[in-house]
Length: 430
Image (tube, rainbow, N blue to C red):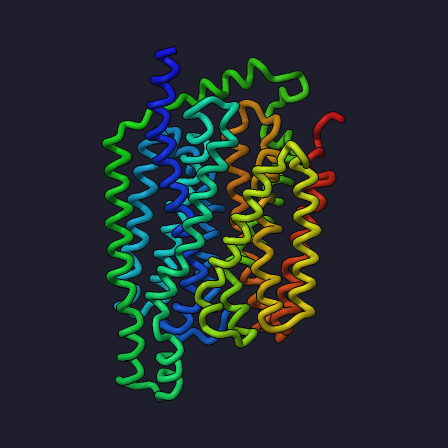
C-alpha cells in the first residue's frame, strides 16, 4: 500500500512538468497565427503567400527532424532530450532579435525553423514519456489533461502577442502606406520591429529557466526498450513483420496526420488573414486563433465525454470530417461575421482528429512503435504545405479567398474520411 502511494506521489512531478511542456508547445505553435499579420506589416511583405512562410518554416521542421529526434532521444535519454529541446527553443527565439534589427525576413524564418526543430524534438520526447510515467491504463487520461494545457496556451497566445506586437497596427499601417520610401518610412518599421526584442528575450529566459528546473528535478527515467521487449513477447503472428514498410496503415495514417494538421492550421492560423479579407474589425484579425482553439477545446471535452462510451474513435473521426466539410461549405457561401464564425467552428470539427488518427496509425506496430510514432509526427509537415497552397490559389491564381479556402480544405477532409472508413484497416487481417 505504501509503495503505491509513493509511486503516485513521485508521478505527480513529471506529470506536472509534462503539462507545462505541452503548454509551451501550444504557446509557440499557435504563436504563428499572431505573427502572420505582424511580419506582413513589419517586413513590408507584398502578399499573404509570403507571410505564410512563417507556417512553412515552423511545420516543415517536423518532416526533417522527427526521425533524427527519435535517434537523439535514444542517445541522450528523455530528460536530457527535453532540456536540449528547450535550449533550442530559446535559441530560435533569440534569433528573432538580430532578424528584427537587420530587417531580415529570411533570418526571422531561420529563427522560426529552429523553433520548429526544437518542438519536433520536444514532441518526440514528451509524448512517449507521458504515456510511460504512470499506468498504461490511464495514459489516455494523462494525454487528455496535457492536451487541455496545450490548447489553453493556444487560446491565450493571440491576446499576449496580438495585443503587444499589433498594438496600434491600423494607424501604423496607414502611416507606412502614406509615406514614400525614406528615413521616416524606415523609422516606423524599425519601431514596429523593435517590439520583438523585449518579448522574445523574456520568452527565451523563461524557457531556459524551465530547462534548468527539468535538469534539477531528476525526472524518473523510463525504459522504452523494455516496453518494446514486452511488445515483442506479446506480439501475435499477424504483427510479427520484418520492417516498418510491412505496415501500410502506418503510412496512410501519417498522411492522415498530414491533412489533419493542414486543416487545423487553416482554421487556427489562417483565420486572422481570413477575417482581414472579410474586412472585419482588427479585433477579429488579432484574436482569431483564440476563437478557433476555444471551439477546439469544446470539441476536445466532447470527445473525452463520449469516446468510447457513446461513439468509437473511427465513428468520431467520420463525424468530424462530415462536420468539417459542412462548415467549410457554410463559410464559402456566407459573408462577413457569419463566414468567420463558420471558420472558427472548424475547431470543433478538427478537435478529435489527431486523438483518433494517431492511435489508429500506430496500432499493432509492436517493436516498431517508436519509429512509427516518428513517421506519424513527420505528417505535421501538412501545416507547412497547405497554407502555401491556399496563398497560391488566392494571391497568384486570383481565386476568391473563400473559394480558395474551400478548394484547399475539402480534399483534405475527404482523405481523412477515407482513412476513418477504410485506410486504417489496410494491411491488417479482417
